[in-house]
Length: 180
View 1 (cartoon, rainbow, N blue to C red):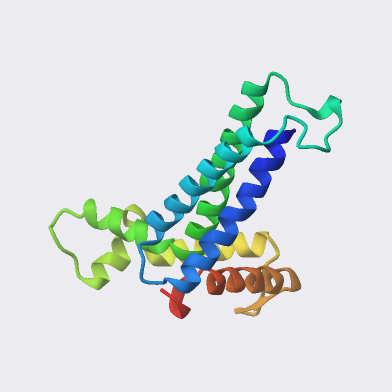
View 2 (cartoon, rainbow, N blue to C red; view 1 turned 120 degrees about the vertical axis):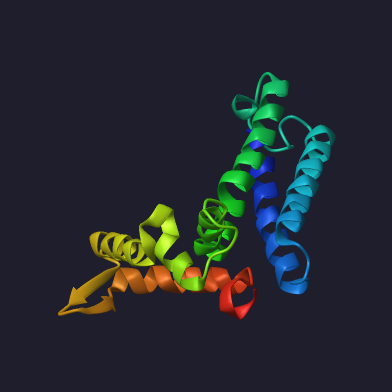
C-alpha cells in the first residue's frame, strides 16, 4: 500500500509539474519536458520510498506491502503507467490528432510532395477528410454528444460538458489555437 500511495502522490506531482512548466515555459519542447517531469517524479518516488518506513507511520500492519521489493516495483510500474498511459496521453489527446495522420499520409504519398488538396483527398489512406469527418460525426451522434436537427449539428448537454472539460485542458496545457 505504501507504494500505491507514494505513486499516487507522485502522479499528482507529474500533473502539477507538467501543467506548471507548460504554462510558464511554452517555448520548451513539450515531450522532452514531460519526460523530464516523469524522470524527476520517478527519482523522487525512489528516494522517498527508501527513506520512509514501510508503514509510512500510519498504515495498519495489514496494509504494509510484502515483500517490500514487490511493493516498490509496483509503485514504479504504477507511476510509469499513470504517466505513459494517462497524463502523456491526455496531453496528446488535447494537442494532436490530424497532424500525425497527415505526416503518415505524406510519408506514404507516391511523390515527395503533395498539394493541400492532395493532402485532403489522401487523408487516412485515401479515404479523405470528408470520410474522417463523417466517421467522427457518426461517433458523436452515437455517443449522444451532438444531435442532428434537420442538418444542423447541435451540442447536447453531455457534449457541452465534455467540450468544456477539454477546452479547459487545452487551455491548461496551452495547446491548440490558444497556446501552441
